[in-house]
Image (cartoon, rainbow, N blue to C red):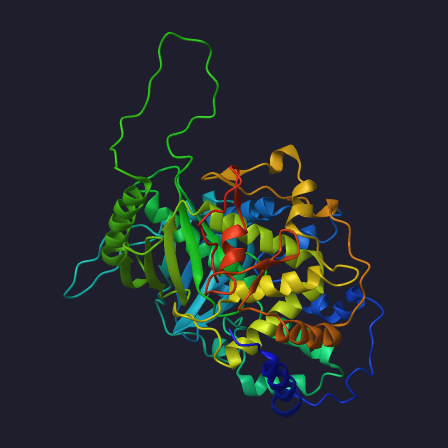
Length: 502
C-alpha cells in the first residue's frame, strides 16, 4: 500500500470545501476534557447499537456486553411487528392492543409501508393477541399457516377524517442525505463539534437497534421449529457501537446449548443421551443446517425475500432481505468468535467518546472516497480502519485506550474464554478500566491520525493492538497480520480466524 499522505490533504479539503467552514476559526474552541466535548452527543443519543436504556441511566455500575445483549433479546421476545394501513388512528390502535396487556414501548417507522413495533410488558400478551388473529384469505393463492409475530392491521371501516390530520411520528431508519448533513455541519463551531455531530447523525438509533434485535428474534422463531433451544444473536456493527444507520444485520444461530442439560443429577448407574444425526465435520453440519433454514426462509418465512444460500464460502451463510424491517441480513452458525470480536469493540467504544467519533469519521471519510465497499474485494474494511484508529489511540501520550494485553490482565475468572482453541479472554467489566487522563481534542487527533499513517511503512510493517507494537509484515494485506493475531491460540501460535469485518 502506498503511503496515504495525500489522503490527509483530501480529508482537510473535504472538511473545509465540501462539508463545512466552521463559524469560528478551527482550533478557536477547546474543550477542557473529552467528556465536555461529548456533552451534546450524549444528550441527544447514547452510543448506538447497544446503548444503555433509560431505566439504567442512574445505575452506577455499567452493565457488561453480555448483560445488555440478554436484555435486548428479552425485549425482542415480547415484541410484535405490525404492518399498518395509511391514515389509521394510532391512538385507537394502541388502545385496542392494550386489551391484551400493558404496552411498555412502541414506535412507528416506514419501510415501503408503515410499521409499528409494539413491545408488551409481558410475553404472554403476544399469545393473547395471537389467539384473536385470523388467517388471511387470498383469491387465487393459498396461505402458508405459520404463526409469526409479523402481523397486518386491517381496517373494518373507512378511517376517521380526524386521524388524517394527526400525523404519526416515524423514526428514521437511514442516514440523512449528504446535502442535509453538510447543512447541519455548517452550524458547528469547531472540527471537534463537527465530528461529534457526524457521529450523532449516522450512528444506530435506539429504535433501529430494537428493530435489529426483533429481526433476529423473528428468525429465531423459525429456527426454533427445528432446534427448540437455539438462539439467534446479532453481531458485528449492529452491537459493537460502531454501526451506522443502513448497515447490514449480521446474525448467527447458536446451537451450543441445544440438548444440553445444566441440572446435576445424583450418581446413577444409568446415563441417557439424545439420538442425533452425525456430520463428517462442523463445517458440513453448518452447511446442512443453513441449507434447511434457507429453504424454510425462502418458502415459508414471512417477510424474507431474495434468499441466497452461500454455503461454500469460508464462513457458510444464508443471505436474505428482511422486507418488513428493511434490513439486509446474513445468517451464519455458531460464529462465537465474531461475537467476541464485537464485544471487544464494544468495550473500546464505551471507554471514551472520542474512540467511536474518530472511528466514525475515518470510516465515513473512507466511504465517501470509495475506499471501502460492502462487496468483498481487494480494499480495506471498516474493521481494519477501526483497528488502525485503536492502534493510533493506544500510542498517544498518555494513551487514550489500553492495549488488549492490558484488558486481559484485568479479566476475572468468569472472563476466561477459549473458543475453538483461541484465547479470547479480556475484561468485560467496564468499571475496572481506569479512564484516560488524555484531553486531546478530536481536531488534533484527526490530523495526527493521517500524519501517523501517512508516514507508516505499510509495505514493511503492520499494527497490533495487543501490545501496541509495529510488527514486521511479510504479507500483501497490510492488516492481515493483526487480524490473524487478534486471537492467539493457547498453544502460542497465530490463528487463522478473521473477525467480522463490518
